[in-house]
Image (cartoon, rainbow, N blue to C red; front, side, top):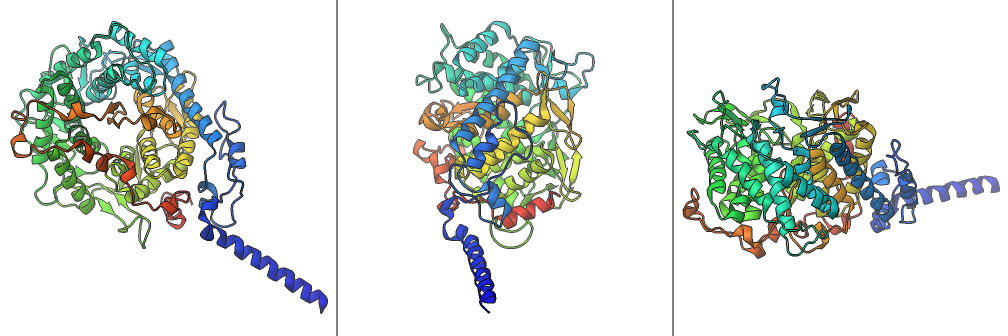
Length: 606
């Protein structure tokens, strides 16, 4: 009897301890309990101790038995690990940038497998994948300028600016896409000019001796060469391409995408307001209003391809990815930067229509039953589903939702794209959510998921997003690092590489990863207000961009001249006002583990 009583007592004691351990996360979420876990795959060179840092943790506690998601992601993120990840992100940029300068400059891009430069494809003018982007103007160097400043490398920034001033000319017989030249080249020249002339110099001494606004003059020269795209168009929507020396080619296509024609206002508006010349903002704003006037009377949605002469929608798909993405982004960012209330009104209408017609799944991200929220591609006139794929560019949208304070919905959509990343170690260009497989399997080092991860971390300060950034950084090091830089993945399943490193890898992907882990960066600590363009170029949000002298000639301004006041801007753009995520969830998962598991199951992870 005594033996049986002893066994029964020990059994009851064990059950009691298990019950107590199971209750601990609910009773004391601030204890930051989480599993100590090793790397899912070897860390990149120079970071061999990241796993040991996580195992040490800094919170003094192991994880309670139970949920694997809470064990992996919840809890504080060790500051030593964060510092090493910051340095690894900087090292990634330096390796890519130095490889370009050593093997490719002054050509536009680096071929990282063969360690050589790449320019326009003169032998095949129809190779738009190359020729739309590469204009024979040292694209990668220009696109990377403000990343050098954000990382505090004043000597290389000054050297690079001087190289651009001394060696780059836009008087080239190159036919380029107006959109790509605007966001990659014009935007970077303006960003670097703003950094150089900032009297506060928050990133260190980025001034250039005897600087005489050369970058601003170069920006104007380029923009003037793009202006012919806005001529001889019956709708005011620009031609998609222009020759920098000769103007619009005689055989130019009359069809353009919504994003390409409607995402020029930020860069053209900045240029106009710096120069005091309304021309550039006027043509860009006219294009936006022309597109807006063509939206469906039934749904309020826009298509993705339009004829610039007739205004007829050639592509009737309405979605958030390729062809549409940055149009919505720039409606909001133009309002943030310039304070024109009509931009906000257009964005609010667009966002409401997106929610009504593109959003599928349960109403709330973190509550209720049903499928997780997902934004699909629909017919612009009927709102009916057109296909069952989404593309990687749509991963920008959670970041845009952060800017308007819709953080809860951003959390869910971001989790879906992160689940796809976990499955493949990259984002396929197009993913079929019904087949749970890539439709278009390449990954060209795109930044959109990193961008949304960074902005969600800024809004929530949840360490989960630092874990996401670490996963992305590891994947890039493991699968895309090449002999002389980082290479496009030709196939995310097979992990085969293509010999191309697009310029946005340095201007965006590396920058957002670095800022995610650099808590003390002047972007976060200087007291200045900043906004990122769609190419990741940093611009200051200040009074000079909210003042213009030409309200009487901008199209439609007489009806909506009301501007945002400087003290109202914070409610739109800054994470301190994104208060929909409760404080008690700061060190817990942003998405409940059962919903995270549901998303992982949807993409075939489990």
